[in-house]
Amino acid sequence: QGFTMSELFPFPLQPSSVAWPTQEWIIGDLSPSAKDGEISSALGELFDHGVNPPVGKGISLATVIIHRGKLVLERYGTQPDTAFGAGGPVDRDTTLISWSMAKSITQTVLAILLDEMGIDVDSPVPIPEWSGDQRSTITWRHLLEMRDGLDFVEEYVVDESGQSKSDVLEMLFGSGSSDVAKYARSRPLKHEPGSVWSYSSGSTNILCGLIKDLLGTTSLEDFLDQRIFTPLGMLSATAKFDEVGTFIGSSYVYATARDFARFGYLYLRGGECESGQLLSREWVDAARWQHAVDIESGHGYGQHWWIWKSLAGAMSAQGYEGQRTIVVPQYDLVVVHLGKWVAETQPFLDVQLDRVVGAFAP
Image (cartoon, rainbow, N blue to C red; front, side, top):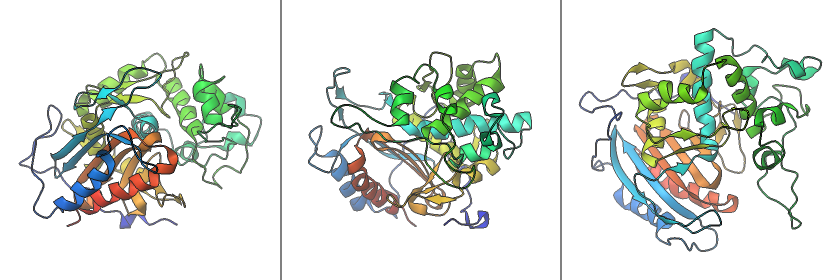
């Protein structure tokens, strides 16, 4: 089902001749070894239909490709008009939603805090309302790996009457929206903790509630800005919080495609950035160690990161509507895609992105 830590491809070092992208990405050319025609063909399948995609396809809004530390390609689309506002052209300065790519940012925050506070990832999480039942055995690792066993339905569809049994919709947009962590904590146990993998935005927001507790009077908004976004140069990035001040880390970070690439680049360099080791390599390896596989997509799962097409050590932050930040140490590569691809069209999207990734194989 998975692979051993020793099989993970090592992180490529920052080239001595290339500046860190903290201020600006260095613009480069596609390397002679990259299959330019394959990349152009795949991106054409994603972008060339504009805001009127044929059946089975969605709308691509941004793609940024970083190879060997340089930005070698970027392409932008057009936002359609929606009930929430007018659309228009997307460019390098347009901030777009992460959806579940935010989960991978949550892992970064938690990794830093658990290390600094000396908290064992295999210790039970301190949630008072779980003290009287088996949920009290749920650990930080269980939540990070989506193996907590809680009964949480991760569905993004409603029936013809407009009703849904989806916990994620109720948490984000319904009765749980004012306190997402409280809603997720209230879910009963369905499986023994640690026994079953089940992807859950509730698991992430439980962790975000715990992060809020760990920080105490320190603002998580300030923590994100000072400890992660500013050191990486992600100056466009903003996070969304619920009414009680909990980071909705399952779903809501807004940033430009170039800035999401900066986040992926942190992991490509094994947790290192211009100012030093931002998070330990052990945490980055834990994030990309595959312990489960989504049969439908072929992607593996680590700790709040996917493993791209189960390629040993290749990571992907992934979100609803086709948000992707793909990190491939084997090719010294980061590929970001942002768009609006509904669930049934995402297999086609991932095929095209896999063509892009494969075009950089040495």
